[in-house]
Image (cartoon, rainbow, N blue to C red; front, side, top):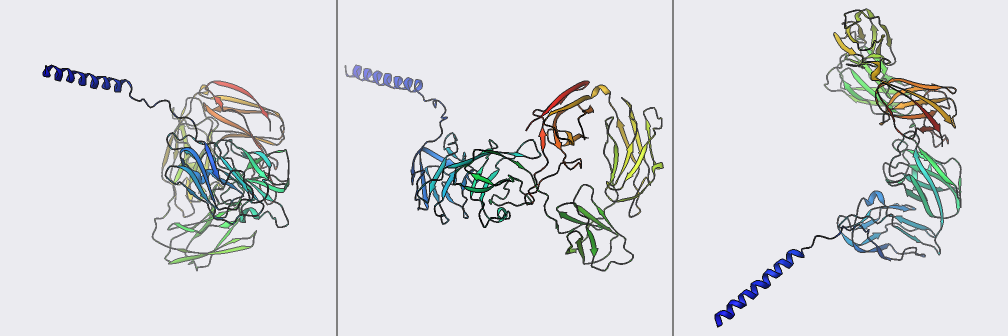
Length: 539
């Protein structure tokens, strides 16, 4: 009987274990639905929108564990502090954020801290969108606001993280303050929109600017920062919406420290507008040494060529006659290879019917012999060539009539190009082919709307590289023929000074950049296709 009881007890225990096992299997947690809710601010110490604020420490409490993400770029404090805030947690999770202010607070001033999307929950990374903490050191909060849009003056897309600043215009204000002092009010477009809104402002007169603040120091550096501005004084309160066009100014002239690039070449660079500079050696140069100064095509660079000679160092003076400025530099010499003549062709395989072949040299060319340049087609028939030496671009221009589905063999014999040192080119051969007219597409553009002539209509790649450009003084049909099949951007530049290029602005002189309007969509050009498009110019 005892054995039977022990058996039944064992069966009962086994049954319970199996039942629990099955329940465990059926009830295994699957994790549930994904958390998509952002954290919630449950308390602030001191309270948000506090007045007569005097403490240096702020705590913001949330309903779940949070962490900070890219807070250095996302957090915008207005007016900005001179010293950075101490913010925690850094690299960990917490249920609160602690902010320690390391500045002396201004009297009767409303401060805002906009965290952007830097506060996210610890598990799923859901962001608390644009949490703003506001306090006043006075008896009330300033309540005025200002809205606007930032856009790039030249490019189709606008940069992210544009700082929008308000400077109060008082008896001490000058336009140079933007290089020296942080603004009275500050906001940021962040990375999701180019619309901005400045809030909690006080009444008064202001200068409104926007900058791409590369150094993130709330100061304008014209060498690296883009800037946009409103010419007129802004008086608050206002219900106007402002547009700021970002551009990079032409920097003031400044020479760059020259460098020895080869044993026969020193590079003298400079920043600023195109200048007619003089380079004079102070070191005694032997009479047997040949020297030659030439501008690098398309660059703010002067190349000083010379036949190598022994010297520990060379001293030069760079003279800017326009500014009556002289700068002296010492260049240490060292063992370097010599630059020798190299020739490169603009086309190496296929060539478009409208393209021109050019042969560029790395050393200034002093002479060319067109008799040493020849071309035959695939039937070995000589082809007539139009050849000219472009001394500014330091290249040989070779133009010829192109037939469909043809192959051309270009031969360049030694002596076709002779550089300033008397060196000639090696033998060069290029094989160029053309396609069929059916391989290309034609695009015709008609402008309408708010068009101010003269205008420059440009077709570019999606990356902004210019493909074709047509200037017009009056209404006309803009024809872009024989285009490679591809997607293009189309823009109109209002060329107010008629120099057939886009001109930037100047903050100090209150000059806005020339207006650029883009066609709203990419234009797809297909092979053996003709497309006519109406480009309506709208602000």
